[in-house]
Length: 146
Image 1 (cartoon, helix red, strand yellow):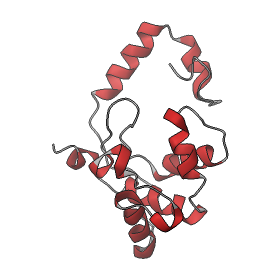
Image 2 (cartoon, helix red, strand yellow; image 1 turned 90 degrees about the vertical axis):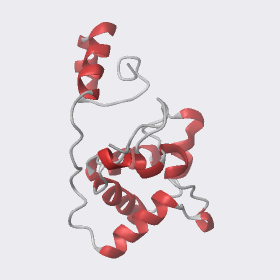
Image 3 (cartoon, one colour; image 1 turned 135 degrees about the vertical axis):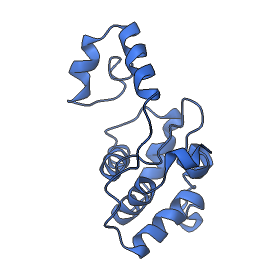
């Protein structure tokens, strides 16, 4: 619905979202929510130092840089918490990276109280790459306790 409402911009998604009525949007969401979660991609070539930094940001944050951990909102293992904090484990690294960059560049702003925007602005490009690679390598099914 956020694409239809214009609260999130995407040249790819907006034309398709605008073709669907509200019930069709709900039906598509229900369909995708039932699909088996597969491991993410894009983090397989990251070196150990980059992955270690990603794990640090995900689970502990970086208080010296005023960066709260991803886990604080997105839950243990990045499994998601409610509708405002989606699951990020197993997402494609390129997707995570693009979304973090969009918040950092103020091209995306549909998060509660600009939480992601303020965090993303504190992340370096290397930090964005690190946390994206780390989450892409996480198993969302295991994070959810399945």
